[in-house]
Amino acid sequence: MRGSAGGKWILSALSVVLLVFAVGCAKKELVKSTDTASGAEAATPPPVETQAVPQEPIVTETMKPEEMQTAMAGVAATQEKPSQFPDIHFDYDKSFLREDAKPILREVADYLKANPAASILIEGHCDERGTPEYNLALGERRAESAKTYLVSLGVKAGSVSTVSFGEEKPIDPGHDEVAWERNRRGHFVKK
Amino acid sequence: MIRSAGRLLLFLVLLLVPSVSGAVLYIDINAPGGKRMPIALPDFVVTGGDASLARKLPEAIGGDLAMTSLFDVIPRPAYLERIVTEHFSGRRLSFPDWKMIGTEAVVIGQVEVRGDQMMVEMRLYDASLGKMMIGKKYTGPASQFRKMAHKFANEVLYAFTGVRGIFDTEIAFSARPEKGKGKEIYIIGLDGSELRQVTDNRSFNLFPRWSPDGKRLAYTSYRTGLPQIYLRNLADGTDRIVARYGNSKSPGSFSPSGDSLYATLSVEGNSDIYRVSLAGSGVQRVVGGWGIEVSPSVSPDGKSLAFVSNRGGSPQIYVKEIGSSGERRVSRAGHYSTSPSWSPAGDRIAYTSFMDGRYSIYTVRPDGSDPSLVVSGNGDCLDPSFSPDGRYLVYTFRKNGYSELKIASVDGRWQRGLFKGLSAAGSPSWSPRR
Image (cartoon, rainbow over all chains, first blue to last red):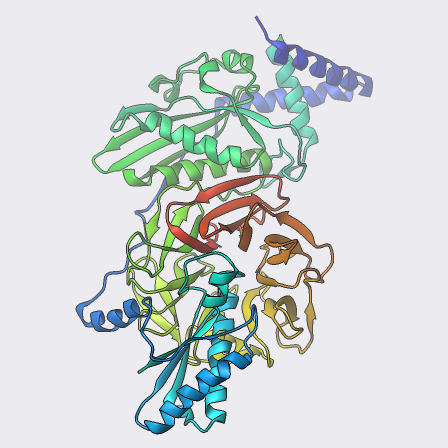
């Protein structure tokens, strides 16, 4: 009738009972009082509590018509923008300008000096390695080091702005050294 | 005879073991590899509505309990007794039948759905004592049936361990929707069900962080074309911009009181950590320096910050007491350590570190001692976030552009996938308790 679990119960129960007997007559009261308690509890089981679970509180945003214009800028931010200048590239986890970036930056500086009304947005990008939040800050630093160099070449600071996209906008979808090198970049967009 | 002997034994055990807030400690939650509690979860009684709930509810509870590695769910085919509605109106369970299959606990339930509302009564019995340990009735929208199961699983865990469960918590994260190149914020249940989209603006929406009351999410959005920190009210879907100062911005961590946000703001290319008041518009720099300072995570007592700085030449984790000038490095090994998450008990900091050619999750004491590996895989493990009970971490697993969210116990012995339905899923953040 009973399984091995029952057998184990008997054994362990017996050993505890023996232990309790060894302790002496105090045990009898101990057991009795718990029996009384168990009887009392059986007569009045814990009450079944009722709890209300509210409606799902999470609402997806809805866009108002007047927000659509700025939303377009948000969508546009996810798309690669054409540039008349080549990208500059950076070493892994570094934001200093490499020598191969400087001729490109001089080209950008010459353009801005020749066109005083023009302004440029420098996008800083990172490869996919590492963590996204750190990469956002790293991309910022890359864009800013390009800006600092442009200003040192005589470009008005007010005509250059920066934005970091961290690792969110790879130009090369690959996952190897070649792709990573292409994706660690500064990208120049005319505003 | 056998039953009374077993009952006697259990009562003696109950007398010997201290209780926490009235709960009996049957299981020591901090003793890995200890005895597991065998539990049976027979089909619920459905008196009206969707008959599939008879199994979905106990399965949800069983899945939650299995996650703890403290319970063994006895397989259903072994069960000898069928639960009927009379069991909720006075009929006694046949406890010998439950003991015979080796279980020590039985959860029974009864569901009634009326229209879009439902009521579920759930009970936990101690099969040895033949005694009800918990009885709860939950009422609410029928769509919330999983939430009700998770809440009862919390009760079951509490009854056996004295530790409050987290089964009704959720994870916020960012991922690429099926259309477009942007990323949206999503929320998913801890059991991997009930995926919901929070943002829908088709730009980049990144780095969600829960407020301490679980009612708001701070996150970075490019919805105007430039990164700004927004504060989303989850109940009504409204947003507001939190900080206008600076260029790139990412929310790091709410203060424990929820009245301010420790955030990374970049000013002229220099990323520093600021405390942003959410009531007014005050912005105060907390951590500065010439390098990149990013990713603040506040200690649960609100007195210290863990953060990332590359001031030593590579990104590493530092800790500072807020208001003091002292800042100490706590990550030692690896040439890249980022994304700290302070444990709810305050005793550990989890972070990402690059070692042996891959990114892995480690924890360390706030004084920098006792670094310990949590998870390392055949790919990269990134961006850990602690569960509110401090026993688990949710993190991003990435390999060759593939990305999913996973959960691991803090000792690394247990791991499970959480979500892999969308590409580029990442930056998970665990909600507070509900």
